[in-house]
Length: 477
Ligand code: BYC
Ligand code: FE
Ligand code: FE
Image (cartoon, rainbow, N blue to C red; front, side, top):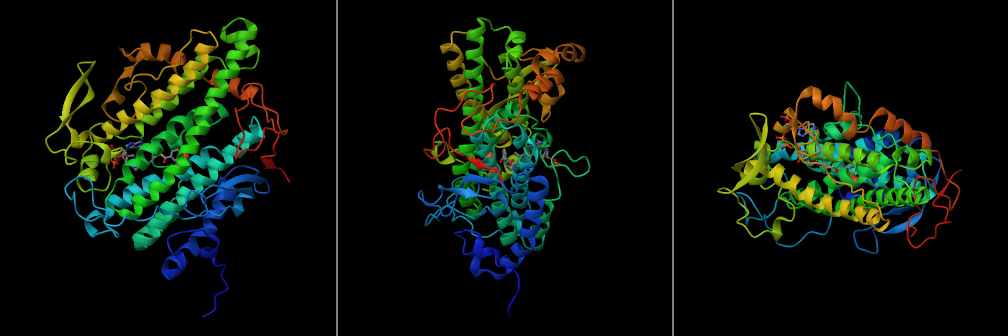
């Protein structure tokens, strides 16, 4: 039978033998046009005709996943890739430790795996929706290109999860794949699944802090899934991690360039007075600290409840491990181990021991905290080198939480538990105020002449793929 339908599988670079699976092809042929209309409506605003200097993964080999060229984003080739299978790979943890990994989903694990894949997949288009207006206020062509690179890769991450749903979850999987395009960030009737993905990313400072912290949740969650017993998910998330590194780089270097610029302005002024820094159209460090407090705390919530029977089940059944599970030297079963979590007792924060299996969300959150702090230290080096005393700090983990028992307390950045009224009286010192946000918005005009950078951010130390600063990273048509 001849079919007059575009053969999408030819256009989708992949190493999963898309051509050999007719059912899958039909599912994708149905989903793909919906994805493209979602991209047109909810993706980067006003960008459909731009030629963007993008990296496209065309294979999983090192030479193949860094192919650069000008592309219009709707024509981006959202490939479907898995890291090559490891022969004889066995499950590394939990009750099935030592058994061969699964190539398919058995009935017993179906609903938990589906839930994890759907939750992971949902964050990807959510972030594209959150970032869709940022192109209008880009500080440079270089930054605009990086935003679009992050956006297309999040689109690819969605496609990767949709592939798994179509391939392994039948009718339910197809429904879940459709629903990924129906929930929307911040939509009151049909929001995205996790809290942080319904918050706004209204400006570039928020974007950099988000990609530093929230994409780092991606790193930790993907790493935990990459340890898992369902091999297609493990191999898929392993490849996604190569892209995540770039997203976190955009965040870390973005914040670092803001700090550099602010320090230069403070030196010029001979003052670190926030009002004078603002008058010079740079971002004062206390404001940056409030943005950091917000995105950090909202991201901590993404790790789930500190005491979670779901987490215990995910681990014991082998579907979600710990970060770098195979580098740990314990028994990888964890039945008799405890872990200290922070609780509230008579209005005070007190550590208490719980079975580690139930505390695995907290274990991952603690690993994330360690990793986050390192980059904050690098930003502080920039401030120190410039000769200023201000230091950025991540707040304590009980600060501004919405998930888990800590959500019932108000905790200051200094770590004290506060009354409702004290908290409300001081909240504006610690979280971005509407004044902060409108100030930030007021200095972020569009700056897109080749080689030019907005006044609130320093240029990067090098360009993309050895291109210079003057390079036309985006061409407007
Ligand atoms: N917001 O037992 P718990 C990324 C719910 S980021 C709202 O702890 P669980 C990216 C929870 O659903 C990586 N609700 O749950 C970054 C449950 O509800 P029900 C994303 C929340 O399932 C930047 C209840 O609270 N990947 O890739 O063990 C740009 C009890 O909680 C939240 C993943 O998350 C929240 N924050 O843990 C682009 C990996 N937290 O069922 C992309 C997959 C919890 O009682 N997901 N709840 O009604 C998971 O591993 C788990 O689902 C979670 C939650 C760790 C998220
Ligand atoms: Fe992603
Ligand atoms: Fe990401």
